[in-house]
Image (cartoon, rainbow, N blue to C red):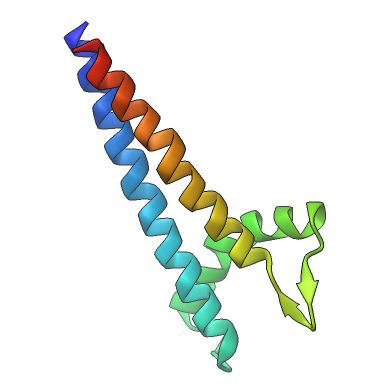
Length: 99
């Protein structure tokens, strides 16, 4: 059972890191949307390529705009926080219970 517990703990840690990195990518995307960034810049292209698929899905499901501001990054940020607080902690608790 300890092997499964270690696997779940490692999975939770990797998932937490991936969510944390994606949150910073999302913050970078929001910041470059405030300035007139060069769309030919490789960093700008990466940020758009990494976030557009998720943000487009949110925009299709919930056309959340308030006063011309796109609220989809905020919704994705809340979902990331939920996944970190619920899913990662649940996996850690399950791993602890299996030890």
